[in-house]
Image (cartoon, rainbow, N blue to C red):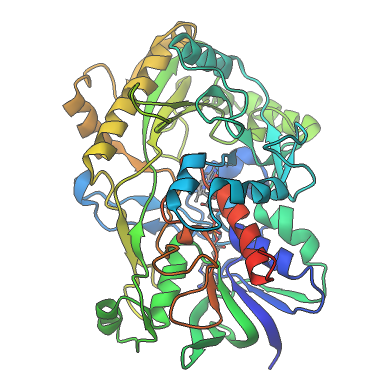
Length: 517
Ligand SMILES: Cc1cc2nc3c(=O)[nH]c(=O)nc-3n(C[C@H](O)[C@H](O)[C@H](O)COP(=O)(O)OP(=O)(O)OC[C@H]3O[C@@H](n4cnc5c(N)ncnc54)[C@H](O)[C@@H]3O)c2cc1C
């Protein structure tokens, strides 16, 4: 049987970084196992194509949560990448890093903001050049988005409300309004696969196996020695590194005997180590408002006519510009929902299209979306394997809106998200608010709206938390030769979008594995 030094499970945002950095040492043999296929799907590489991948089961796990108790027992659809690049191949491309206080607040030695900043910089190829916050020459492309009349109007309206202009949300401070930066270059998505894996795959000491679901970690006593997969087993001399993401890493640990005792007993899995694996799930909750637009400037308008669609396609093919080169997040405002709060606690997204269902058909009218998500979350849920079959989706319980503050921030954030389009100059483009509509006004009505319509904004974390399941070197407590390196190890969800953080953490994780940190 072929022997490897390291087996990396999952070729997502973190897994591609690990496979790439570990294989830089030609003396190490690395095996990267991915449940999904290669990232050949055309829409992966076109930013606006992200909407087309929302429910595509060939590249997406397409989970459904359990009925949510605070959302009228609604199940929340939960896309996750199942393809080289993982969720970074199907995400919305927004490039954000969180706030200093998020990392300092984790209280884990070696994981405060100053310790992570060199890894953000190392991973990055910033189109604006290097400075104290940003790096150039890294594998992840970070680019600017083309300006747009409606986005300019959104930013001017937010500024008119007293929200400061901020040209760089990832610089000295996140607060303010401006354009997002995106993981994009020349109109093409920069995923962990295109950024990190492509070059690394040329190395003879890295083997990548796609369509290979890992079903169990194999232990010799308490020492991880390899993995079982749908295609057979693989052995390793040094470590198994789990990069399966916030839902699949805990599921795989549980199926392998590492998890809460009562759950493992129920599943009939022999206990290897009793740990709170799967507990503590966090995510950013999200609510959208739609607006009818007076001028035909939105992507809805582009999609409404074949001629405009053709023009949009041609513009993209010839110049890599136009609507196809931008995903959902275009402009934003990071705001404090109350003046006495010390840092922004709500993120307002401006999206230049609207649709009843995300990833669904765009509205026939000219429309845009203004949405809100909470940034520092109190609610916690769980992820639990349902059966011993790794092919069966785990039970996901987000438990959104479980705390008073989570509910308040969503209501207050929604008020700000509605106020911006009602302020000039964006006001001049508005025909009316389509959703929630004028009849929703009081705090109780807004909260009811959030409960009935709120969704995930796709940032689940914290199911294999540092301090609880893994130590600060990301080694799983109570066993040997096993680490988890992905979004699941974050003690709490950082403010804003989290792909850049997962990648920076994986950069540091690679240094830890190699004994460099
Ligand atoms: C629709 C969507 C939009 C998003 N938008 C943004 C955004 O705009 N900006 C941003 O910063 N973040 C965004 N995110 C979040 C961000 O992309 C993720 O947080 C990040 O990619 C997670 O990285 P990860 O390495 O933890 O997991 P993933 O990237 O999900 O990787 C896990 C990988 O492991 C594989 N895997 C799992 N189990 C097994 C197994 N048993 N055997 C083999 N392989 C396995 C999976 O198939 C997957 O490829 C979005 C996410 C989604 C889903």
